[in-house]
Length: 278
Image (cartoon, rainbow, N blue to C red):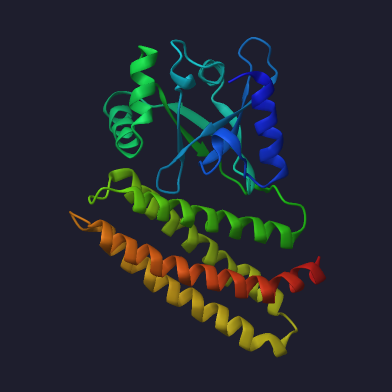
């Protein structure tokens, strides 16, 4: 991809909270900034990524099937400390090029979900490196400005991920692949963490001195508990040795309906409070 096209994607990504059109439309996308191995200057590249359980994400150095490793990979081999923008947060991370059986297992998982990866590898004539990107300790920086915009950005990310998973389930041919299981489990963990943060920090802070809002926060807490049950049920389905497409479609659909309705109500009630507090 040319530098001009890269820059257009980067600008669109940053302007639209991680959403872009064209080649990357509907893809899981992040911006990876490495330090130039020769220049020492920051070098930002838009890359598709794979969820990997919530603790890290994975990127594949396909370079569109080119015979040489991309520059961003050469950079992080020299300096594995990188910056990641995911459309919601910006954070520092450590990149690790996977090796041996771990690399092969991850790549096989990716190629099963999207045969395009295997096609890139055949065209390139090289074994495509797989890189794990793990956030460093410490809170990330919200990409959006105000607290209300930051919350909406997080919610929009969950909506997009639910839509992507529903599309992936629909494209399945009966059996549920390993990467789709990981995508679902990563979503489950993300929702749990988000709700825990709201229950333990955000909602108590907003509720201080507002007894008239008790019913609102009681309802939000009850909806979190109900979704926790749905998440447990989805995890139980995914833990079965064999999961049918219809079963997963039903469970993901139930969760999607509940989450969308909850997010809409939460935004209606909480966004004005956040903006007033700000």
